[in-house]
Length: 100
Image (cartoon, rainbow, N blue to C red; front, side, top):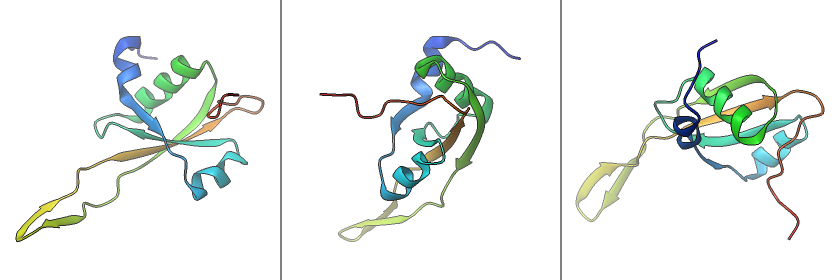
């Protein structure tokens, strides 16, 4: 397995996604994260394992098509993004909502 620089791995994961669909996936021990578009599946796996100290069994990625955005008479595109659905091993979990 390839060794990755832990400082570079921390920058790959942007933020966790908290939507209705993502909270339904939590029951299946799956977590959804926004990641950089250039991130690969092995890099995402290594980043999640090093950041949260859990064991990842699989990583699925989604790159939706670009959407048009209009401001006045100018037409552009929304920025590209990539989402990763990470499945954890049985018994592992990530605390997204720490006790306040």
